[in-house]
Length: 419
Image 1 (cartoon, rainbow, N blue to C red):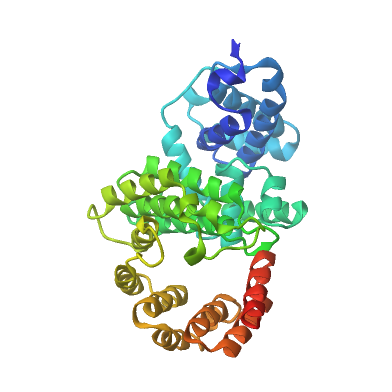
Image 2: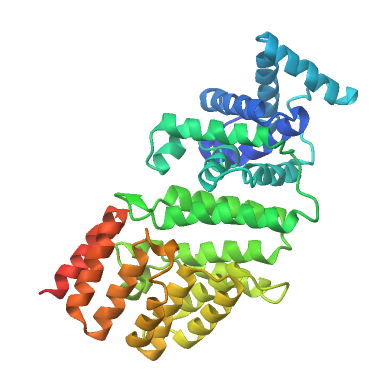
């Protein structure tokens, strides 16, 4: 029996994206071969995308996809001798009572654990950050290789190679499809959160190309973090990460003006901020703080909340923001944290004090290829009235960023100082 897509309350794309990690998890759990399972599930998703618009959504879409993926995987294993050897290996590993393909309406209760295991597998420490991001978006996010390639502005064959290499590394590392044990859990969870945060940041402030932001990536990062929060509801830093994303994404509409130019936080129209996201993020953070150790995501979410709750730049509680940055620098020190603290220092103690703190980053090799230090210096020099030095800093920053909107913004900023 089938039903029209509208009856599900979802569009096809959203429904398939939601089901993709559950189906892949179920197939991985049964066959213990991530690469083959991933290929089979992609074929099942493609079949659904072709068939469901015409025939309607099955009563158990998840069961339908699992059954089709099982069939595809079985066909593959029978297609040549190598695949036949794999089939024999799989058969020996699978308990007798599980060697029968379940019916299409079968719906086991392990989907939550499977999705979590899948996230951990795709964010395995053997993978580079780009490889982990690509594999997470493909396997857990349900995006096609072409969609991921477009998001990161690289050719589809290049992204396909990246995904293939990531799967090969997982296989070479002997990674198991299972949640990490208690001893490994904290470190592996940090890796998963880091990958999700990288996806969000690339979407919120695209590092290259013509777009200021990539809403497809921010939306996917938030969706996957909501999934992680649902699977690990007692982890304070997971809730902190979700709150941080919501409170930051709330300002998305105000980050560009009518001319599509970048608008910095201090000049944004706050009536364009999304109050629903601010309320959700603030409530989530309020429920989380104090329930466990305070980590960097909770602290960054708290800073974002202070910004979001202020009616204007002038009424922003910069002393509280500075205090939070000081705690953040003790918990998770790094040059970007110091740079942001320098801006807060300038708002509390004046631009000279901020410039002095920025000066401590000049010898930091991690800032060598980033435009952020020069951009922040230009901002504080402008505040201090050193116009020529500010122009030079803005121009220097413009040459260092691959983002066209940021290049235009920084160049325009330098030009305006010469008017």
